[in-house]
Length: 93
Image 1 (cartoon, rainbow, N blue to C red):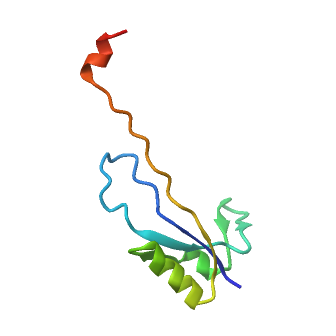
Image 2: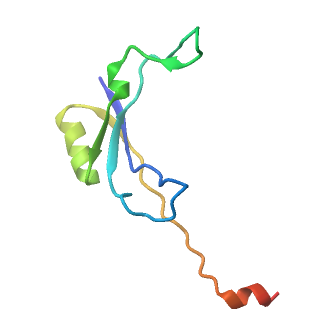
């Protein structure tokens, strides 16, 4: 049986905005990773490891996995902590 993970990818650290950060990815887990003896790269004979499916919502990704009988692990995104700061806080200490 195929195994996959469903998650929202992290934002690009080179950008400050959060746009285009709302797509869910279904990515298959590699069954048999092997190391290429010549270059040292990790490779696999499993072609599903090259496949990433994008969904607009978590429910669509879960429904697809259930419909295709894919065993999946759901990774929920963490909430960002925002600390409110004032310019005056720089001079209070």
